[in-house]
Length: 117
Image (cartoon, rainbow, N blue to C red):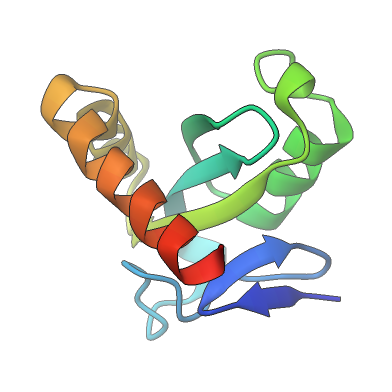
């Protein structure tokens, strides 16, 4: 079951990225890499990562299998971007973790919270 609020995925079961800001639905999921932003309302924390299996990765974050995110559960996936290569995804992840990129992440979170309370 997938739960969506204003174009943002709030829960994830059998989900593939589709229609999120930055996504390109014309590309096939099997060959893609994603950069994603997670947000924890409980702790007002963000997490930025990349993967080639976004649904499995999101599941692992919310089930506590990822040490760096375990204590901030539950997570909401608020943003994804698709890339055709891992190196492109890694560059974008690195950008989001830079000073300028953190400002962009902050704007993404603020927009998400305005739209989703």
